[in-house]
Image (cartoon, rainbow, N blue to C red; front, top):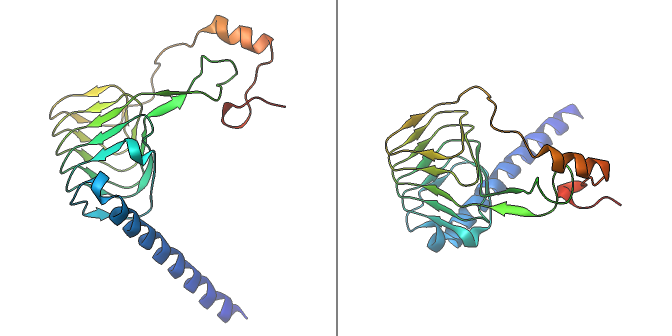
Length: 186
């Protein structure tokens, strides 16, 4: 019995991997007009939402990851992304009508220039701009602007700002808490 389970398990993994590559190949062909004429490789699983707001140049390589492009995403020619990429062009509204956030979104476009190299496990946040020839080291979180030819590496966590505490206290007092995806709780 174990023998059959092992064979079935390996077969299932093979079919699963085959399906992932088939889906990636299908998406590459289906959206080749939007993604550029020469998207050479999607290596691994890549999830892209908001495809109609996504402009990708030629000779762009993705090692797999997760992209939310609803806020607008532009990627220049000859740009390469390693594995586990995360790009967000939108975020929840933490100053809305519920805590910790409500069901509205703040959209800010992400611009990535030509000849950019993005390492493994990089997160690019809404409103970020990565200029031509920049290199983003593994594990970095990009918020704001990276200049032409600059090399950014992963910094340690640091204080950014404090949220509007009066607004927070007001919502907390009203028990205005959000459920899944910030929607109102029943």
